Structure formats: C-alpha cells, structure tokens
Image (tube, rainbow, N blue to C red; front, side, top):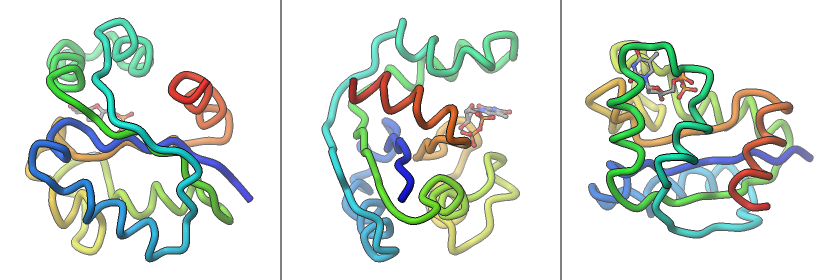
Length: 132
Ligand code: TYD
C-alpha cells in the first residue's frame, strides 16, 4: 500500500468540482485516509513549489494557489502515487488527454485543478507538510 498527497486547487473548489474529483478516486478504489479544506499561506505555497521558484510563472502560481480554499486529501492504495498521477493527466493543458481529470476539466496549465505527489520521496515530504 502506498500513500499520496492530493490537493484540489482553488479553481476546483470555486468551480464546485470537489465531489466529482473525489468520486474518481473512490471509483478507482483509493481510500481517503484524511481530508480537510483550508487556505494555503504564501509561505507554504512557496515552499510547496520551491523547485519552480526560478520559473517566470512562479509568482502567478503562488498567487493562484493562495487565492481561495483548497481541499487536501491523503489517499491510500496499491501504487497510489503513479496511479493518481496518471488520473490527473499531463501538466500542460494541451497534453492532458480526455479521460484524465485535467484533460476533462482544466482550461489552463496554471489553473489545472489538482496536485498530486510525483514520487515516494515527495509524497513523504508533502504528507508531512499538510497532515503533520
Ligand atoms: P509541475 O510540478 O511541473 O507539474 P505538476 O503539477 O503536474 O506536478 O508544476 C507545478 C504547477 O506549476 C503546475 O501544476 C501548474 C504550474 N505550471 C505553470 O503554471 N506553467 C508551466 O509552464 C508549468 C510547467 C507549470
């Protein structure tokens, strides 16, 4: 069993897609171990995306991630980390294929609805960051 950290980003909450996104994870038989809604602080958003801090889109990304409530999910299942990444779809909006969450709902690369851990190392760090 593997655990992964998912964030339904501010546009997911604003567009009232929380239920539909969570339903996909449940349909895939992933277990919701913990879940809460909250607003990310500037400091935490900068820490979470520290690997992108030199990118030109970084200020926009932090502003977006702190622009409203998000939903944090701790999901568990077999191969949960790669499985959930596959369910999210590609980062680039034009490469996210239909059938994935981003492919079906996202209209922008920045406002792309969902985050999920991309490796066991990052999952451990992100679970600690948001679930302590
Ligand atoms: P990244 O960690 O590369 O992708 P992912 O979210 O798929 O793990 O990027 C983090 C977020 O940064 C991404 O979800 C959206 C935003 N982003 C942009 O706004 N523009 C870009 O060109 C890229 C690569 C990412």
